[in-house]
Length: 157
Image (cartoon, rainbow, N blue to C red; front, side):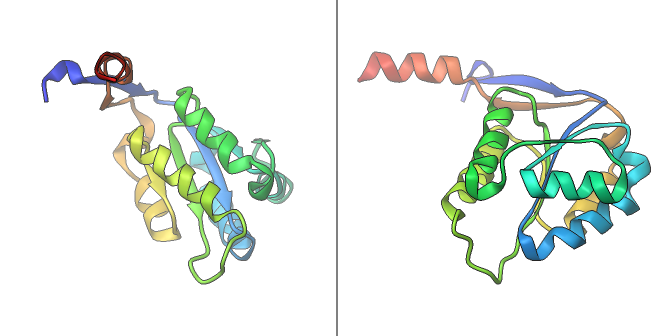
């Protein structure tokens, strides 16, 4: 592909971090947030409903809450990724429990991949990401030039 097939986006020094956890993983995410409070307090935090409220209540970190996952919160976070308003996701998912909103979760994970957004789905990956040297500086990443892609697709259909 030619370079014009991609555009470069910048994840700013202050990250927009989405915090999400399935019910059986909420306490683990809250503990992780408490342990990383000094780093997280320098970033804008958001999350799905119950998780956001619990993190704020138990850590004091301000977390903007969206709807709970089963009520569309995962989709709201996905929309924020598309809008360029979420650029880092920490999602402690429960791989051993069926989720009624599994299609929404898969859509969120897919959109994070499409937009080349860092996503941690467990404590280890979250630890590696939050201690990365990229946490306190800008990071340029390339994504598909969607406008060009749409224009070309519309011309061929």
